[in-house]
Image 1: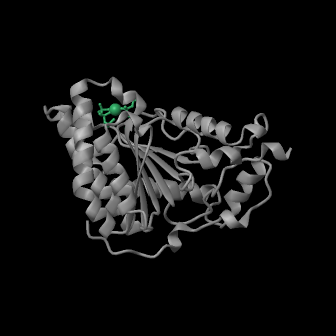
Image 2 (image 1 turned 90 degrees about the horizontal axis):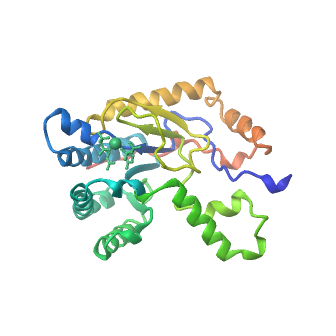
Length: 278
Ligand code: IPE
Ligand code: IPE
Ligand code: MG
């Protein structure tokens, strides 16, 4: 039986805020269309929402914010739009990294970066290095990311690293090779823009995550909208018994045939409040 141990780590115990929020930022194009603007205007406005959300997470003591910026499927968009999205990414890296660093934010970019040009890859590496020592908030940007790609690249790397265990790998063997191995699994998933699908985002990591969908378009998503999502998460936590430390975690671990594991219980709301200057 021990072969089928789940690697699911850090199932959220309780807390007023989620420890890790993962967001599909959708609706930029429709926001622009409503205003008779080119789609790019929506993406530009969307970057401002990213800035607001980083600030909102810092203020709330949320430890991890993960944003889906560009999916492996997004290459199918018109070349002009793809080029512009890349330019926006470069511009954001150039202008925001100093501010992120000043606010104690660690930046990570995950996905198949091999398709990006060398200059962009260097900027990403420099930004990650510059902010590597920060721990107030880990901001992960998923770029040319796909959940299936992630699982497959992890499996391939595991196969190369531990060929002698082929046929006997555990979930916990694969987990360290996933691109977000440094983060607990998301407690709250948000998708803006009204669609209710996962669009090949973090497939492995969303196994026990609470889902929240909203029709609000990403450029209009703000602090109040985030608060509503967190409130919904909190309510569901109360219903699921997450207000009593460990209760949901015990229930989930029982479901997957695991004894309680006190060590994985962490309360996000015990994080220190922070001063933000974004
Ligand atoms: C999300 O907004 C941003 C990216 C995928 C980069 P969209 O561009 O998908 O906007 P809609 O869905 O067309 O409104
Ligand atoms: C999902 O949005 C991907 C990102 C936000 C980067 P899309 O708008 O590309 O997703 P689909 O195509 O509607 O599923
Ligand atoms: Mg979309």
